[in-house]
Image (cartoon, rainbow, N blue to C red; front, top):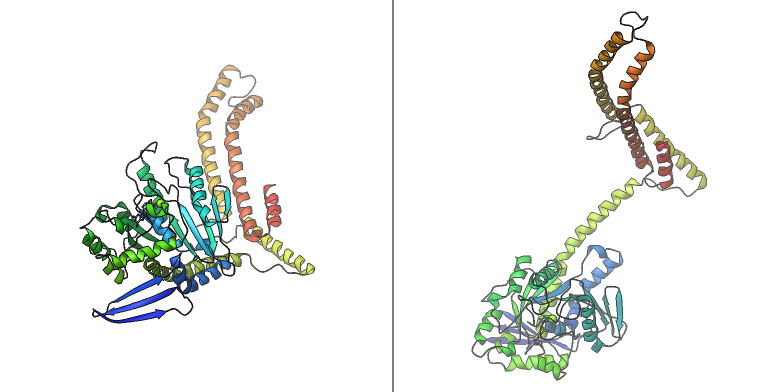
Length: 508
Ligand code: GDP
Ligand code: MG
């Protein structure tokens, strides 16, 4: 039962009227009508989301852009469920639509509000191509062209995205993403795994925390069987950023209207954020060149006159303007939620940069003579560290070892190697000495081998040690060079020439 009806007209916006209905259960239904406004998100957006976006803009001006993805709205659903139509109605920008796979690449629609200009500007970019558009009616054609270039003419899809930037005084600052529809069977020359490919592509977009997922389902389809809904629930199990949208209410089979009403009232497949129902332009409307503004009027009339869906309109669950209002609210909540996250990110990177800054130590003085002292101090500090290194007194970390210790380890290995070599060669030498005694002994006393012969025998043995000895030398010089380089980095990290000179010294 309706107890009271309050009508509020926003002072600065002639086009939006909000009517609040209070009924006996003290539940509230808000209905907003953006009369005559083609782009419905715009009017509400301006007043409520604008402050949030302004805040983010000022942060962007400070250079935090890389850390923050702006809120986006992505639509997912089966092929021809009406995704592009919903986006179109929300943004006021005509997109390619129709039957079959129409959206074959992700289309990122970046809407930018122009404040002091009255112009409409569009730009389609993909691959290396950038295409300026001066008239809104060319958007559809250019987007189709881009799709053909990227995904080929035909039915193929591509992960490569098309970016469509629209700047106009009549659009909100918002990013909308149109994605290919989910298909199950490949047709024509489509790859057999087209369904899997499309799902992977969709997931990439709806996974992002900044994205609000609109799950689009035609009213004349059994919602329980929709893949899109389960995909959305997978990436957003808490349902914090998923909203169900029912389309094509004019195509509902007679007698099944009550079922549709139950779905919209969230009684069938429960979603934390619930459902909305909208009617967009059908194929016939497009052929009749029905404008987006007229389509909104017709939508309103359709719900008002509908015996079953009229109630949904009163409950604030139907029409595009109402959906726009709803999304605005969701966006504000979403942005507010992501702000603390952003704050943390900024704090973290601030901390990191401060630490890095500290590493660079004191500033280089401006004065020439002071510069000399500064340089001398730097070199002295380096020398001190090198001295400590060669005296085995350098300071090392918990896990690290001193240079001497490192070298000693290598020499230990070396002495083991010599010992092994000696053990091996002892017998050979004895055998050779014995052979000499038996075969070639001249005037020498017993046990005294001729010097030349002895030299030859020993040289043979020493030769086998040559290669490991050179290896050992390289190892040790590498270790020493590394230690020098570390000291140089520590002292001269930010002074490239000093570091290079010190390194050259270490290498010689
Ligand atoms: P998408 O493939 O999900 O992007 O679907 P489209 O937005 O291209 O819509 C597919 C077809 O459904 C188009 O011919 C639209 O005109 C039509 N369509 C979309 N919404 C409605 C609606 O509310 N009512 C009717 N009758 N047709 C609609
Ligand atoms: Mg589409």
